Image (spheres, one colour):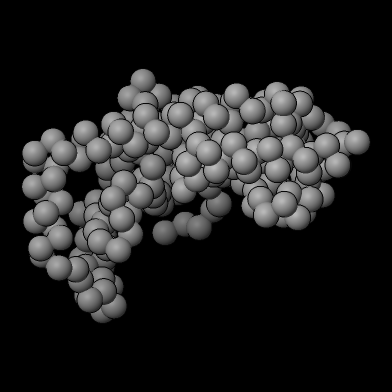
Length: 228
């Protein structure tokens, strides 16, 4: 198998466009490689925001992984893997060597949860809650971070905030930590791409609307200290 590097595509909180998905699949076919698709948050975008998973477009080139960790609980240790048939024997051999497995009771409970429609109802409630959290960010953005823009659609588990060009990411991140606010810089996701504007990536998966509003107010204090 060839080892040429794929197109550089890192997460910024925005979905991968259809054109870039097709480009990634074309690369895999060209080099006789495989794509590992970690579908960690497909339950959270609104249906209108979703695009077909690369695995559905190229099942012979994509290893598709998912779990119930974010929609239910990590302690359940329930996940799944769909892979091209020629890889399954190797995958099963590796799994048998280190994975102690999981209880059949949890698997049967999840199957019943899915069959009854309860999982779908649960996910709809999660999407509503995360939409409220994202709207909380949008509501406080102009006051707390003047000049910043919320990039992407109104769904998902994190917000990508593009900052004014004169704002330095790392000093702002350090200042925010003084107020017990942990944010990540856009450079973490885009790696060597120095042409893009500075940005913050804010996760709201584990913070409710009240806590998120308090964190944004604290982040605003750090922002004002930095910008004067």
